[in-house]
Length: 409
Image (cartoon, rainbow, N blue to C red; front, top):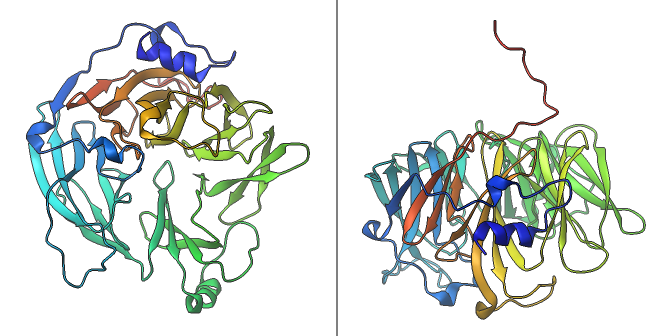
């Protein structure tokens, strides 16, 4: 059974979305391959398979250039004034020209931990984190200051269209009242003195548009000019609500789930709501838009775990990665190195759920980021079999409910 058949069988596509002929035919060949050993890339030890540490990133700068960053193994000289708990690593960044694979620019950055350090901002820009400082870079790989947090950064998240950045930082009690008086809060009213501060920042102006507090770092599914929230109803029902950063909240839809559903924003107007059926450990996935319309539904098997996503900037496609394990996994079930079989990445059309391409990534990276989509979703890159493989894709199917301009005369 080929990888496409594995995904089609494993995802258990619902009656409304089927594995069409182009999702089960022979595997397409990449349009180009760039070997990574000459760049200095060395695969991490299998010991790190379940650690979910960030040691690589792959992103399109534009359709003809890639940014590939990776950990360079070797001993590092400790900086005397650095905290003893630091876990420093050297990250090498290279800009690759396509299709030649020529290295145009390269740099090395010292990172002080093993958490995620790079995010694609779109339009050729990237956000780079060093401890609690954020920088912006481009294909020059020069780091320009973006934002400095006086406290530890807990999380950095971007909206699918890269308009908004959610920055979560450890809060200082003495700062909370002054911030509350100057920046509007979003979401429900909250108890005071929660330890995590959440700021919604405009990616271009860097202005803080809204803030909130939480007990722990949380995922913020940002769509449009707000975010989604699941509110528990009666008898395993959940209300999916849209909360704008400014303005009145409104209900989008109601779903049934035996667990707290999660929401993954995949475009500026579409999010995946992942729910639990009454029995079994599988996941029911519904794509909904900001009008509350369910665009498509699928069932994803529980033996695919630790999902990560990469999104095209125009919202037409998303890539979904998960680790395939040898047995179904419940919420509290442990996962060990021996049970992980492979990392599969599928490319989906956002508005129809159509599966366009499936590839396995090698080496398996539990933190993801070893695959990428171009801004318009027509190019897909993945690290596998000792090279970066690039695939050309046809244009995504459009939103069937979108208004279309009349043809030009």
